[in-house]
Image (cartoon, rainbow, N blue to C red):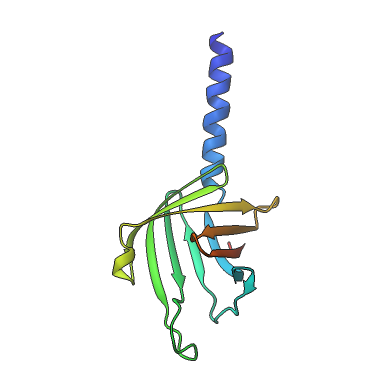
Length: 134
């Protein structure tokens, strides 16, 4: 009985560790859509970097003058389990986002070299696909 329980606990902890390391690496945005309308990506492209428990990212906030985009940055803690990504923002270019928690649905490709995240904003849905750089 103990052996079976140990095997189950080992399998669960191994799965959890594998799940949390799935996103570990450097990612670049490949495509984005807002309510199924494709968004033209700004160059240089946004980057996300996941360590074992931290996330760092760059992004371009929506603004009136699209000809002069400015780069924003943020970082925080994250947890990824069973297709659910939770990010808690510790610091950000937009101070009002500090301390906020975001939960998104994530699906990772079978080869682990891309993932798609869907952010349900209530009234709108943002969908992004990211590709692994390393």
